[in-house]
Image 1 (cartoon, rainbow, N blue to C red):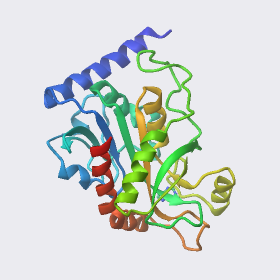
Image 2 (cartoon, protein in one colour; image 1 turned 45 degrees about the vertical axis):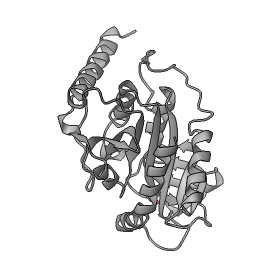
Image 3 (cartoon, helix red, strand yellow; image 1 turned 60 degrees about the horizontal axis):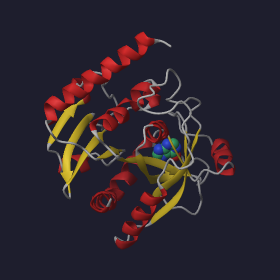
Image 4 (cartoon, rainbow, N blue to C red; image 1 turned 90 degrees about the horizontal axis):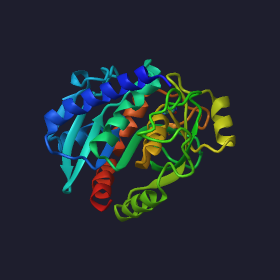
Length: 278
Ligand code: HPA
């Protein structure tokens, strides 16, 4: 075993946690939220303390346009939450370790439930852009896994079970809330690709045959790590567009942002109610 590596890893985590705790004092977050495209201002509404990723030892700067790149601590319906306003994407060139490090940090800070949100393309024809989709399971098409490398036995087991990465119990809660709020939703399987190019129609056809209902470029690495370290996960996709070839329109990032923006109020209401109930 490479003790030096584990020692360095432990040291890095310790300095991250020490730095954050100096800022947040005795605030203990119980719910973590990764805010995907268009949802960033949810964090602004509940911002008690924010810390830029670039200031946190062990974190890297987030480079994506429109993402602030900070951890935001807040209180929603008397629940302490930690929010990622902007995430690291694999397609930006970050390692899987960098992409998933914040999840391990959340675990160490006391988080028990992680809500992962994203924008995704609808693979299933009778889904409609603008719908939310509660993720029931995923298919990892990223060609790698964030757990590759030395295992930290203190966080999780070498070969974690993946039978219920997305908590059935949390999906039921989310569905009840969506119905109460009259928000149209779907449930389905999320397939993750590396991006940054969108998929070809042939790829989307293949993903569909293999059982995917939506496709995106994030979430799976974070969900794998969350499951590994024992967090309950709720995954929600905002279906911003039809995936390539599902409709005859070409894809563009502006459309993704526009649809995410339209759905944002529903999405925020759902999040708020969910946090209250969970
Ligand atoms: N494909 C991949 N990622 C996405 C899409 C898509 O169609 N829409 C939003 N994120």
